[in-house]
Amino acid sequence: MMKREIASYVHEENYSAEKENINIIVGCSICIMAQIAASAQPDQSAQGKVR
Image (cartoon, rainbow, N blue to C red):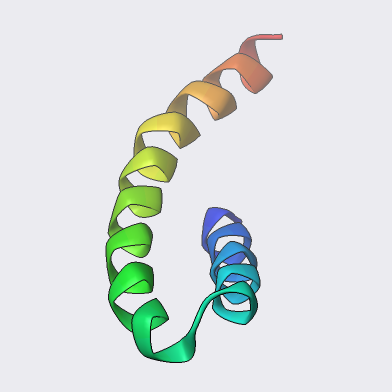
């Protein structure tokens, strides 16, 4: 689920930014977004199950 959201976010950034520079930016953003998603995903799923 999270990977699809990240992919759509990257696609939006790809259209708004230059293709030459986006390769480096996407590489960094994917790592950052993956870390955020990995740290946030358990919390969101836990809250959803508890509530």
